[in-house]
Length: 111
Ligand SMILES: [Zn+2]
Image (cartoon, rainbow, N blue to C red):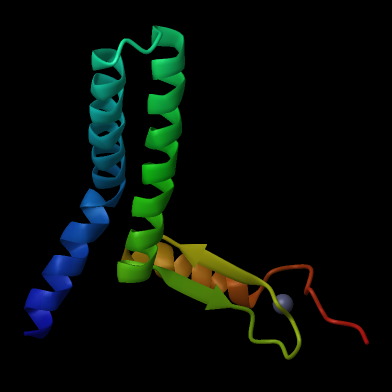
């Protein structure tokens, strides 16, 4: 069970970026196709398709961040420094964890 879960996570990690891109491209081009069918000018169509592409890309990325994202926080009291990673592998995760623990300027909250 543990091994199975790990392989799913590894797959998600590898697919994260192309998946976000493909979904965004698919939704964006479908949107463009409908606009062209309604005789909307090309420049406007391209603009709309790009806007949809960007929106979907951000949404998919946000979803992936929730599924397999990691947040590393500084452990110093009162420091609000944190790093958000989208589906990192073990090496990346460890490296960013170390960076988060030893970042140079702590964002301390002065009262
Ligand atoms: Zn800090």
